[in-house]
Image (cartoon, rainbow, N blue to C red; front, side):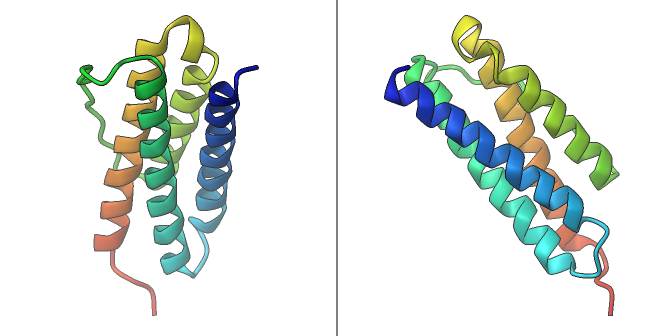
Length: 122
């Protein structure tokens, strides 16, 4: 397997891991940890989208990303679905994979921004 492919697979694994950590932290009393994990997940998903874009020459692709979730749990579940859909498509349909990864990153960013505005527990 070429090194660039392994790097993309490793980044997928890291994003999945961070999303899972964020999901576990979602219902904890430590909202700062949850917010930080969402931010890290979004950043890593953006990096993954960049990798897919550069490896497959999609730098001119501007995906149409529409997503909105009021519930963090539903948002995180949607991200998991999008990433699971994208991973096997990286080589067979990189445009669709890129679209899914960009959508996941957008959902994570919006959820992160929403969690920042949510009232903090004392």
